[in-house]
Amino acid sequence: VLLHRLQHYLEERGIDPKTHSVSVVFGSAVDEILKAAEESYAGIIVMGTHGRSGLSTVFLGSVTNQVIKSAPCPVYVVRKDMTKTERRAAGRSAVTV
Image (cartoon, rainbow, N blue to C red; front, side, top):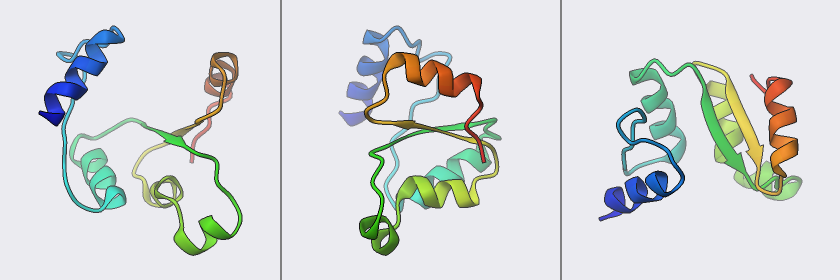
C-alpha cells in the first residue's frame, strides 16, 4: 500500500515511475540510504532537511549529516523552508560533499 501511494504521489507531480526507481525499505535510515546509493551506483543523493542545529543535532545527530559524512557520491541538501528560487540558486552553486 505504501509503495502504491508513493508511486501515485510521484505521478501526480509529473515524475514518471518508469524512469525513476521507487522502493520502500525498513531499517536504519542512514544505513539504508547509503546501501541503496552504493548498490545503484548513484551519481547524487538528494535529501531534505529541517535545518535543525544546536544541541538537538549534536546529541541526536541528523540523518542528513550522517549521510553526508559517509556517502559514496555528492549529496544535495534542500532545506524544508527554501523557496523555489533559493533551490534553483543552490542547484547552480552545487551543494555537494
